[in-house]
Image (cartoon, rainbow, N blue to C red; front, side):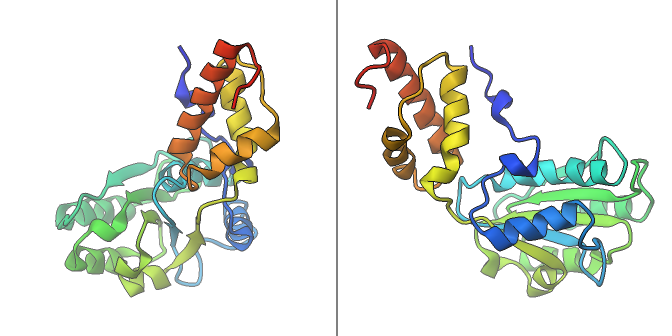
Length: 224
């Protein structure tokens, strides 16, 4: 049975980010070219539609930053923000953690807040208040950046993750098909399949598996 964890990215090069400037900025932040945290900015907001890989990238960033700073495991904390979440307890937990130097190599605390726009206005205001840039790094995802506190946005670098072009997904699609033990169809036949998924990584990977199954069943002929 295929393990979908095999296809999780382990580097920024394996992340599909259509906005060139955003990918360049994130690469520079991770690799210490752009000082971070610095100048009052201690957050990274990953903004884009559903399925574009924001959560996956959010979980990856802490370890990439830690490795670039001579560490290994970032020991990051992941928080799923539920719809209408008050977040008082959550923000209090984060505040307590970020008051002290972390035991990882960089001394930074990494907090990942998935779908931060789901937090109430009051909770986001509390979050803004603890974004001091001392020991805490805040990595947030959102589908609706207009619903995020403007002060939180101002304290963050915003990475735009809009739906990528079908061609950008070809390497991942080919990896999935190959892992299924199927022959690869020509790129020209894969592009429409990817395009029909409207930039959703979940749908694209599922479609790749379907292509692989069909390819195996037909012996690689008339796959699509």
